[in-house]
Length: 529
Image 1 (cartoon, one colour):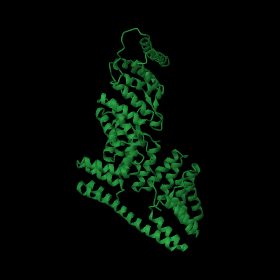
Image 2 (cartoon, rainbow, N blue to C red; image 1 turned 90 degrees about the vertical axis):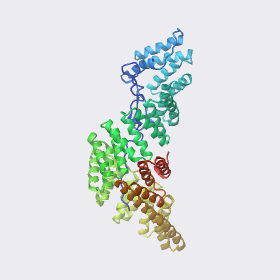
Image 3 (cartoon, rainbow, N blue to C red; image 1 turned 90 degrees about the horizontal axis):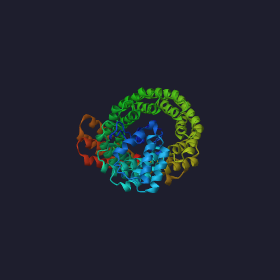
Image 4 (cartoon, one colour; image 1 turned 45 degrees about the vertical axis):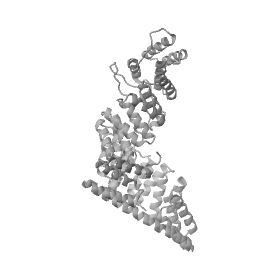
């Protein structure tokens, strides 16, 4: 059985969460003007909401907004205008609820009072009533179609509601009317990335960082988009810039480490994760990822030490126990590994990977009945777990229970039809049963798939050679090796990425983008987009 390594624990999957305010500082005729305070709860954009009027900074913004929002209120004494001005005074007095009532009354008298719609939308947004705020901003945009700030707030409200398409539509209007407004480009980039329009997201986020080169969060999100677009070197540069601009930005530092792991640079990744832990010794994701990078380096003893420390920090974490078990298994400390895996299972009985890995260890120790029980437990939690089905079949075959073994092998092939070892083992079981025709069919399919697998292994060798040539600065040789890898295995997304990276360095931007697009088509990580 192949050695398994833990997966990354990324804190950057939706990094809009790093910004606490939708609007950056605006200085339109006042000393300090801050935008609507938009805060978040842990968990990503789906849980983001407008925050409360903390320290009443929104009051200051509204005062500044009076001078900046093209308030063309005529000096007449209509009742609607009186109510509108009264609402502004109530905001100054820190009475937002009363101000909302006054604005609603004003709009009953004059439904086309654009300023009242906007101020009402803004106040509703600060109270977390985003759907109602959207309605008011949309009304304002119909009455004031040339006012860019309306589209900005409308777009950010849609973003925090999780509607990426509507957000992008509004923000496109904002950047058209206000092309030098960095926050509009920033949120447009976030919306485009969430909608799966990665090249367009990169373009918008690059513009945001150009207009506001001091924004570390924007560089972080640019790095995530570049990574999605198979521009790993540029992503690493963006992550480094984010950390430089915002020391202690552990999320960006963690994502930098993950990008370096993907680049197969474990030494640099280890340094990045250790930097996170210098700033935050209890950063659980960094501990997990540091252990993973050490395993990539082949330092299993170091990984065991990291995961033991993690278990001390979070003794009730099933994932920490599981990763420690994996690291111990990689060191061939099977009994100790089994102990940790059982602890992980006791903490989370549905952790099917722990059941499976425990089964592998028990199989290595020839404890067949216990191994079979472990594999069945893994399958009960994950019916499409092909590896566990195959391992169960192997145990049953060793026990002479051929009918049950054949059933398990067929179940495995249902979810992993391209695995030659399963076809070959099934063929052996069928031959033992006397089904020569069925056995020959499986052997033939195994041979075909083994040839394909051989090509895939050759592709990996060509890919690694290309990486070596790239490090030497021999770009032409690197291109040739990456193209050879693609010819051997047209589904190797990493080969497309590496080819795109070197073509970028050669200035062949169009060809590089084409390679990235091909990589996205075959990379399973991008299929959700």
